[in-house]
Amino acid sequence: MKVGDLIKSKIRYNGQKFLLVGIRDMPAARGWIGPAPKQVKSIRMPDGFKTRWSNIETWEIVSESR
Image (cartoon, rainbow, N blue to C red; front, side, top):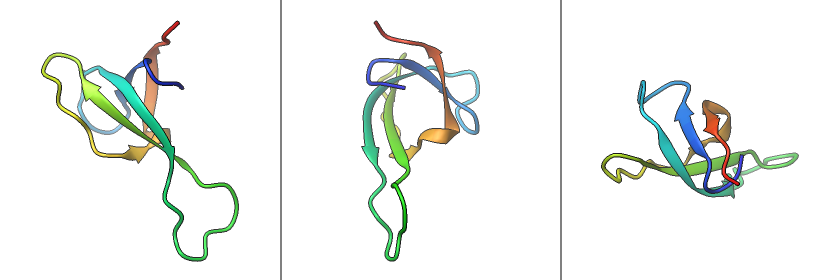
């Protein structure tokens, strides 16, 4: 998954497609051991609604950017 991909949520926003605009490491929790999980931020295509930062594993790719 990379910036510019068209994605959809596995849990929320049924039937809506989003453009991936950011990926970051999840801010470390106190006492975290191992690699930090990733988070994504995206924009809904029709109206520009911006999602909050959410776990990358709750999203799936619809179409990869080139």
